[in-house]
Image (cartoon, rainbow, N blue to C red; front, side, top):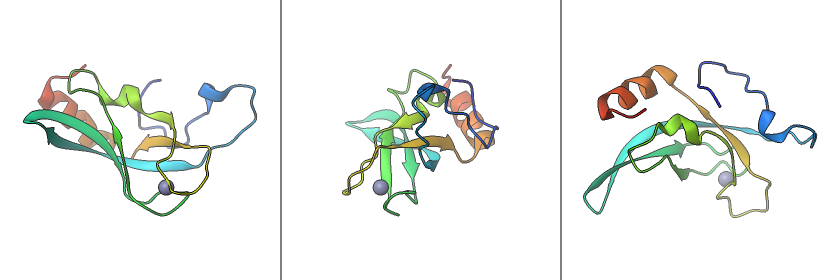
Length: 102
Ligand SMILES: [Zn+2]
């Protein structure tokens, strides 16, 4: 899946199934796990439960934008997941460049 600036993602991951998943705007965030730099996608406002969720965005060695797209929601209510969409592609591109990811 290519990135980012397209604000109306097409659900190619789901061709044929006819299901529409809600869009979860996500912000890339750096964090440390046991001293190692990682990145994660932060959903500040879940489209399903309005809560905040975090999704792994790789081990800091791959382009986190590869991990956008349909993900299972972490909601406490039953759901079929949502589509993670980069909320700020410019900022993400900058972070990715700073971290030397590709
Ligand atoms: Zn949720």
